[in-house]
Image (tube, helix red, strand yellow):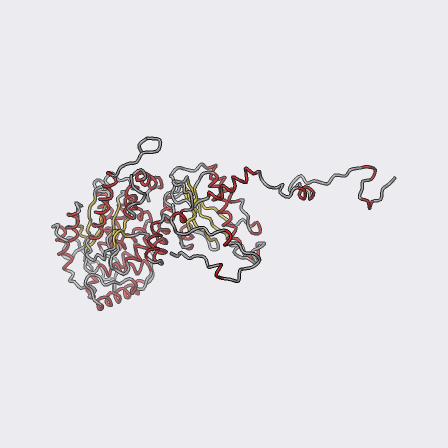
Length: 588
């Protein structure tokens, strides 16, 4: 007997099967209702997943060993499988293997680290500077995560209401990469110590493409049991119940305080190897603080003469003294230079006491062997012609090459009446600052001389206008000793010699060298912070912390020589400190 269709029973006993798609979701509502947890992974897989999340760390120290290509692609593929608003996939992964780009990025991070420290109270600043916040120089691969935002928000499903959801999507890709790296046993550190426009400029990103920072990826040279900033006492993880609200934001604002605001190039193999050499010593890591960092930097250069140092004092006069910008007669330059040759100036005497060789180089002292008739006074004409500038830089390069067979350390100093005005002018031009922010008292100056300095620099900058090329800046505002010191630093970089800087003049020369080639920063050590107003700003731009801060005002390389003597003592001590024994009984 035929059944009514309304009974939903099959006709003639026929059983009809539900159409099941051969692609996509094959589950039925009945299956999903009968086992709501049926989509879960096994307990073992879940445990592994949560273990990976709990073990994720921000790694700052890396081994130099290469990452297999297949492993790298698996990790990047994990990032590419991140969720994205409107399935827009806005992320772009820029692999950085070029050591020049790596070094330039490291300099940017060093500068920003010091800038952020300068915003803090002294104790917090010191704690921040004690932390290693990035491993750009050590990690074998850098990955810059960029977000391509050139599609208008209204053209991406979901961005019309939340325009920044594309950036959040790129952040999801970072998290996927981070967890995948941890699962593979690799370490990853997310570095945001950049001004976004600086990092974008370094990588030539087009307008509309923004970075979310730099990922350092490599085999970790640390295995922290807890997040580094927690272990360092910088912050603690908030209890989960304090970050969970129900239905609405609590009315009692005392229970929900605002988040705490802390505002508070050798190869990577060589950088890591230097740290390896100190690891087995019977002392805590970085026990000598910044001195240990300086010794590590020198060790990373692999110079066989690293224990031998020379103080190089470069002397020159300046026609800008005609504008009454110094408390002393220009003739003092010649007198101090001759005293240095005789070993009796303060710089030469300090070098002798510290058993450091000392040499004077004449870069244009009045009455000396160098013809300086073509040099200008800044206000009316360039300080140096381009031809003379190139010659002086080359002489500095040759000096460093000559030293490479004997020395691993150069304590750099200068002599030159009026050169604090030159250094202030260079600082003003290089950092694009008002001269009033860069002019200091100098040696024995008074308020009138300071005013004269400011007027000279204002006039010189008005004559020249804004320029960006570092060599042109040096030509317009520099002087003989500055050009030679730039060459020395370039030559020292080529020959793996560490350079210990003295005051503002040497630091400005270093900044020009780094602007010419960022690799120069890898050999620089800031010997001291002087009394000159612009010195702190220049050191910050260089990303360097000074070893000494004693308000030294001597010039002539005095601060650099004192710092070098401390470094030499620390290097010697490393050869005598007891070595520890590995657990298996072998000597480290």
